[in-house]
Length: 137
Image (tube, rainbow, N blue to C red; front, side, top):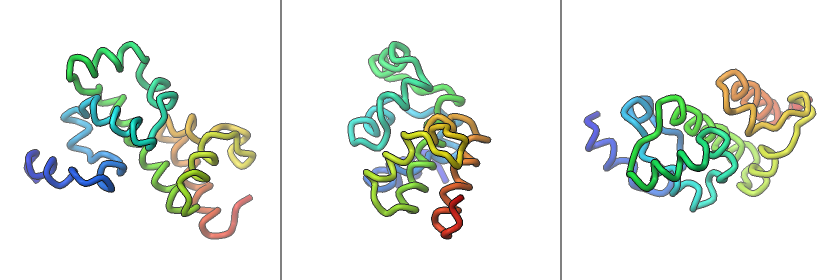
């Protein structure tokens, strides 16, 4: 799909809370899109600043720059985990709380922090899958 068509497709609010597509990550995610996610409460500043230092993020915003591939990949992963938690619990506020507190099934680690790596995100997804299927341990 051409880049212009992809941008047209992603203008809806529901679309903007979903993880970014591979091509978008590689081409560069505009820092303003991430700021929009923060403004709408989809991501927290703390989540973003753990990935991109605050001064760096603010500089990219001011200059209209894009994120590095590694940064955009982590932001996309955080969105994917948020979406999975929202689907599992059906309550965005509860999902945010679940993702921000230590979880015994994850060795008392915080799901949002684990989701900063692919391996950690997979662990969180496994736990969410267990909860969804009633086999949480």
